[in-house]
Image (cartoon, rainbow, N blue to C red; front, side, top):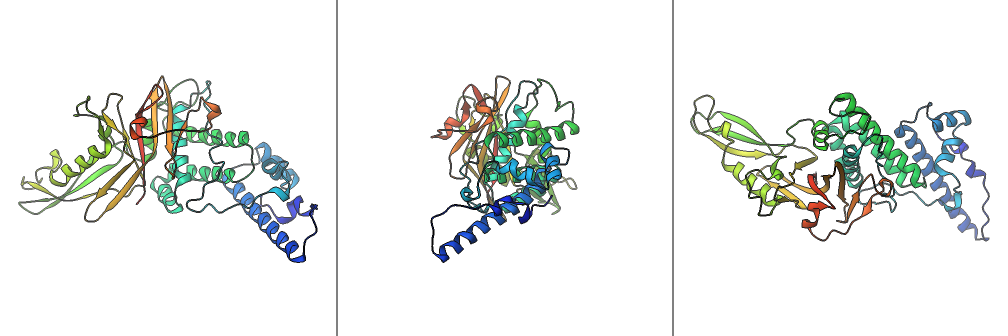
Length: 385
């Protein structure tokens, strides 16, 4: 369905205003026209991205009355004179009502792990530049293309006067579509129905595209015959705390930097010798894969705490990553904290406030280790440069 100017009854409305000059009237007409055209464009975009079919209640009614029902559904009770201009979703723009809804947990079909992943990437996507969104979509298109389309629709809804309850319905609907796709991929690991939990870490592995997550690549050269070779080392377990003193807290930034320094000089053990002449391999350079996000898993007893930023420097690359979401586990439930562009933290728990994100008061990185009785088990970082 395409919305046209003639399908908008608002244009026939008369508004009582104080008599102004002809110039003021013309300006009012132009501004009103711009608002109307903007809304028409957005309604057409909603039609394309919501995935509403004729089988949906609103979609069927819209088919029958030429679009009037769909407009009433989104703008019920709104008069033209009080509709504000709709700003473009440019980088840095933030809707004042973007966190008025979220995924809600139900006792019939436990969804907390899916809620945690969906809400984490929704908040990252919503806060990111268009260029980052495109890279993220291409990185794992089978998963991120439908998610990106759904996120685009949710972004549009934050800029309209759709009520919070209807907005929440779309969050849960898109969360369930994501869960359906996972269940079709592996019904044993991701059961669709019933009070059964699923692994948040496993979901990340699936949508990232490889079980080992991000792997740092060493480019090697044999000191004997000069043959080149490559080796990979997984990074997602750096926060697990293996080999560290569990009693001494340490930041992920320190663990990361120490790991990078070792990799710059020491070939990974299985690649320390040349496969051709058994000569000693030397590290020529390090490379990070061109991926838009990375994650780290953490055990409950790990001494590794989160860092707000990580960097990677090499002769050919200078990359930076910012902490955007933390997933917490405990009491057979997952929740998250997420950070917006300004540095303000929010928390989401599908069992609280109908899934609406709540503002959080975080003053230091150490406060991020726990959320109530739950411990931080996953750190998700967005690549910024």
